[in-house]
Length: 259
Image 1 (cartoon, rainbow, N blue to C red):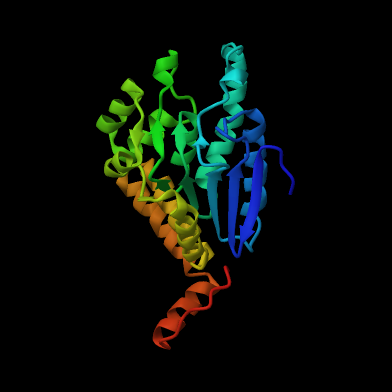
Image 2 (tube, one colour):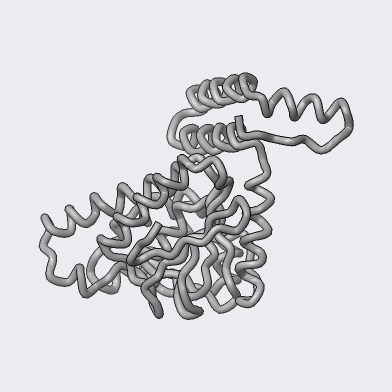
């Protein structure tokens, strides 16, 4: 697959998507459209078990939306752009495979919002994160006000959103915004290690786990437990469930087939 704004490489069962607009990797309509397209392909590829998203270069994961594209838009124009970005972000958030954001530098505005759609965020020590939209007299439009508070709590989210200041990787980890901070030279090795482990998990069970977590988070406990029960039941219909339990009793490593 050839794309203008994204670069795809495959390492075993791990797909690595690199935002390919260095040095700052700004997000534009073309990138959002290509991101949705490539995620559709990866979702239906049984040879891919996990996905990593990172930025080309060492300066930025993604330093926000492309202001040169946005600055002349009116409310109707930005609404059209937002429909494209929302479609891509929702596909990323809900794809039935684990996704890791390997944040290799600045993750600002839309770049932070993109990372928030991923299951895990691993940062290099030089990374800085911010939602600085308030300083442009706008607010986040790619889910930042909603996903951030669900992840780190409303009080911390208000602090980041209202002030719009950048925080360093270690502070982001303390907030619960990122899972791990590593030296820049170790970032991709760490992300690949995590992704490779995840790619070997039973695919249907992992998808059902993600479905139960995401869907249940947006409903009351009683309905969330019902969602969990349904997802639990689906896993019992799989070949991998039988293999997992058989390997447990036979004291051997399971061999999962993704069905």
